[in-house]
Image: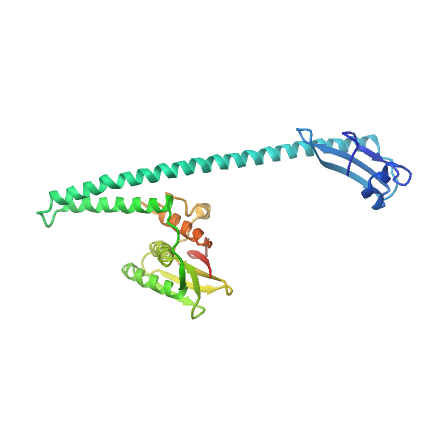
Length: 310
């Protein structure tokens, strides 16, 4: 309700006080008495009014008026702090995003530069030992160089992801083909993979290779999580005629709730020697496809749900 300047607006009897007729909201609401105290922000701008009304004419006491003025002051402080906190939070987030963007550019450039000397080192190692068909030290060096190259490749996918090359593909075919690719690894770990689909065909507009990459990353994590004699299930469910989900669930030990929200952060991993880039790449790919990916702890194991649009 409006007030006269910074002073409270006090109307003991709206039927007799001419000021009530000026304020249509008071007059039309058929209020008997009205007490309104303005709430001002630090910059002098009026935010609103805190008011007390009575259906009958009422003479507000001095104590009641002072109480309302104190309430107005408290609201003013709370609003000021809330606004200041909100601005600080936004500024901090913008600054962090700028730093992350710069760090990403520098890191990507560094990764590219590292690849060139690495390939040179690999070439010289192969040249130096070309006459030796079997050499344990050569094999160790080449294996470690290949591992570093693979790590840099994953890192570049995170910092400089490629845009999806989309087409319309049956999600069931993508799932079955991916499981076939990962079946050998599952067999080596004595892990049982099972697939369930609820429709014969459901075409999605995706990059086939990228979606396969996401599924391979998730399935590898699941296989490693369950260990020997574990089970991993893949359920393909159509939510409606425009959306489908792929649910991958294992019966492993599960993920501690405290770190569930950090899954997908680059270089954060619960595995010894893990980089966390696999899940980070997976999240980025699904985001590029305007889909979603979520992680959930079950009674026994972990459930990953990927949602894609038609």
